[in-house]
Image (tube, rainbow, N blue to C red; front, top):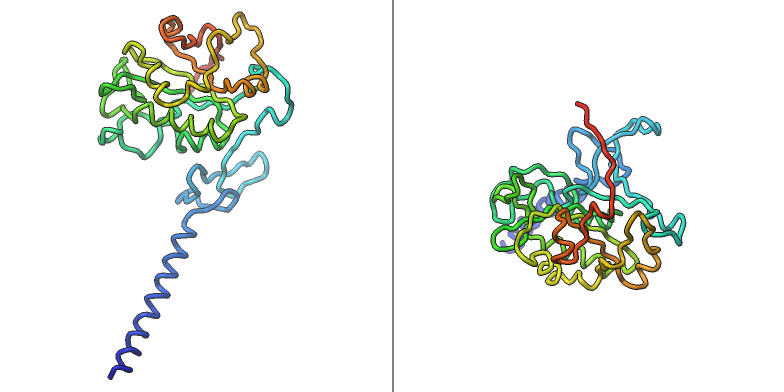
Length: 260
């Protein structure tokens, strides 16, 4: 009788084991890597990739695709920082498929499929962050009317700033620029959140930012001095009150029109 029970158990166990292996293999292969053919209807590519084709280069079969820029410094070195082009993302924090940091559903538009950490790993070097006073803190919101709401609040700014700090710490030759769409009215609000994040050690000082269109220091110089974080604010008052550069004193923006 004991033998019979053991034998029966083995018969039951074997199919379960096979079922487990099959399920594991199915789960493991459920996402596709860059370059693998895919179906645009299911779009089961890895995170940060999308299923698409490019007829311009003869690639008519849909494949998982990720576009990663070439680091311009690897092509030609020794130039001033402003002589290079750096990939920048708009509303870098507005990640799809997430709830608000306060737990509510988000009604705000989203712009990104990758976290800020993944954007930086993939070659992004400029981040546009909308900062607001919210819940007695500084938050990243994609909002309107200068007010952050539960349904437009993504997360506290400190979270993303710490992601940037971790990237700069691990990559000592990289430079990151932050463009703040600034709705913060709390006195020294930006100063406080940057202090807490640990980013101050990398800040490029306001006194060194060139004026009147002059060239910036070279990338090598900025790296050697460990001044690898440039921060601009959309509020002119922050330059005097918090030593954060007012962006339109130093940068220009190409004008464009959208046609639908």
